[in-house]
Image (cartoon, rainbow, N blue to C red; front, side):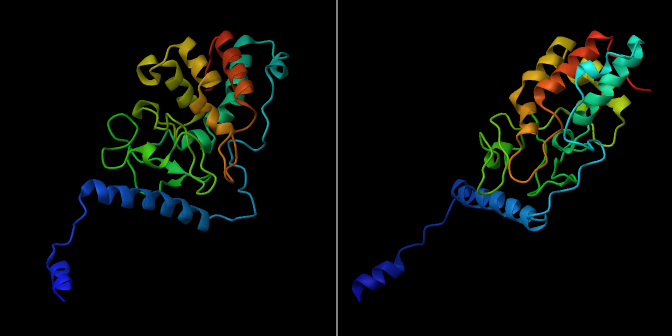
Length: 226
């Protein structure tokens, strides 16, 4: 009886903020992923978005018969634009501080915001849920550099012409043309769009084809659609 009374008299240990975060945050990640899965069909793939009616990209050679250099440049960018305007890219180029997700660009679950560096806030960083690679069990996508594009590079709700002008403006793109080409053709975070995991529809074509189109667009004067 004495031992039982001593146990009952001991103060209960309360969990501090770090311990609570270690329990709650992973649970939020899994809950968000499961909620998304429950709201999407498990067997029927999502219909292709309007910006990417097929899963392929026309090669650069397909535009060689356009004699006018300016018109060829615009045509090349329109083809590359099928990637720029695909949900795999637009989800991380949101119009607000909150990312979107899925092929229909729903608001991100759980609720997260950009934060000062695009990688989330102190309360909930992107890398808390998004690990170094896609997680098959939960369906959570991943990359070691997972974050949102700068606010100046918001693409959602903008025309292809507006996106084109953003890309050519170093103050908004934060990239010169040579760096822009390297980014789209070689950056592994961009490359995730073709290896999104789960049941996500990848961007059309391949990253190499996309990079070739952007390179040809730059070489022909980098003209934008009207």
